[in-house]
Amino acid sequence: MSATAASSRLVAGEPPINFAAHQFRAGNLAGARDDFEQMLAVLISAIHPAARAIAANPGDWGIDVLLGELSGLVMIWQAKYFWPVVAGSARAQIRESFNSAMAAAERNHYRVSRWVLCVPSSMDPETARWWDRWRARRQRETGVVIELWHETVLREMLVRPDAGHVRRHYYDPYFPADSSPARRPLRELDHATAVDFERALFVRQLRAAGHVEVESAKHEFFNADLLTREIRDKGVPAELDALGEADSIAYGIWEARFNAASQAHPADPVLPGLHAAVMREIRESGAFPAELNAGRVHRCGLMHHVVQGRRAGWVRHWREVASS
Image (cartoon, rainbow, N blue to C red; front, side, top):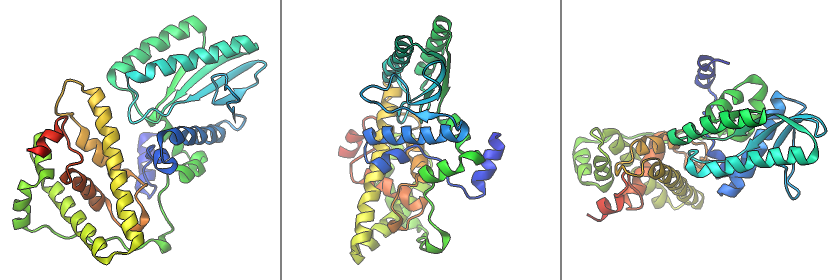
């Protein structure tokens, strides 16, 4: 399916595919790895009905999903939940997985025709360069075709009609239309309040990151503040729990993206693209609790609340900005 066709399907009403969903469903990275591997096995089975998962007992021979017979020629898929980016720290695991698969094939007298690494994210520039060189060298040495199924490849597969059940099961956050509560309305921010917000910490953190235009951030914060006050005033336990969960989800997204940006830009204090990456993931995430009844603007505003509470920021030295 072409990128245009895939986009039209999303516009028609299908939610975006966010691979962070594995973390939110499992509750931690270890569980996310297993959940991603299970998704991959079902996805590959939808495309190759004869494919099967291989259980680790105690070892998995370097195989997560297999196509073929372990007495002849096989194709192997290896799942690695590297998140939110495939960085230099992943190289040793990639080499080890491939070497394990090759050693098991030689030891058990079968041949590998194709080895596919499957990851839910993309490689940073240095890791991509390393991968290209390593892949070419190991293909020459072993005769095995080596492929990379990164986030774009997986999304393209998941929007195919024959994989629709996989996408719906693992990534659709939608509820039936007749059971969905009405979305909280947005309120307009008056000029005087917008001017007052210039002194707020969440705006100062944005300015420290080089943001010139911050009016949308003020609008988001304002609406999230109204939502937070309303929920706390009403004191409904389910809504209070949902508010706390949403806060944790927003903070978790920021923390993962901040750590990745720090690794990707070790010498840059500004951490370019951090704010955009965090807000994009918050807008696309299907993990926020339905009881919160909040739209994208409210959810982004909750992230600004985290910053206002001196728990996060958009530059490497955000703590210094907060303390000043």
